[in-house]
Image 1 (spheres, rainbow, N blue to C red):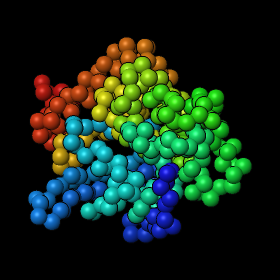
Image 2 (tube, rainbow, N blue to C red):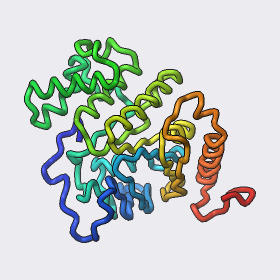
Image 3 (cartoon, rainbow, N blue to C red):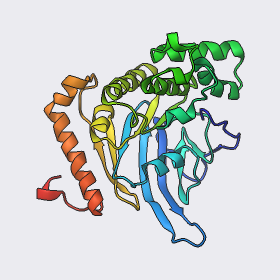
Length: 292
């Protein structure tokens, strides 16, 4: 995984469960997570989650505050040990931070080292990966070009705006050349205009690079705008409320797409699901007014 050096034991071949579709990049099978702290009541964060993401998909995850979105992402990334179930990446069970995965966090300022230049920050996980100096530099500069920061390569993160710093974090992730990119509310701390620009950047990179993206967000509009699917989580203990297919045109822009009547319908449907989740409804409860 980008930033964290993955142990050699972080992936083990899958034997016990029959192999699934080779086109599946990420497979969650009965994932459960319970926090059991001595002297405190047990907390069931994730009750059971089953869903798959096919190679090259961009899938968003939304849910009420406290629904366990970050717990889920950290479990998928191998940063938290599951209570039961398994996460399978490219046919192998994740038991620690895997080599084929990179993560972009919300707190970009904390993930960048201020004493390093932008290029050095992007190169860091490549150095941990064992790449030579020339290859590291080439990949870092290519990644910075992808996010429009070529001229900032020799600057330091503290000299850049928040949006530019998040671009550096994205560049570091894609330079690692992951098969799966996890993004944990990466644009929550930037202004609305910058957020729109970064959303378009993610879709552009996703199309050009063909990487599989799992994007966690609390913003319903962002999820519908970005994703091919939106996975809606229930309130804690977390289960899957609905896996919503986003049947918007593949070519999207901030004005046309958000003005599309279908965008409004999808947004309304996801909003209704989250309101049900906040009330404590479970997936089989009917929508208000008899809607599907």
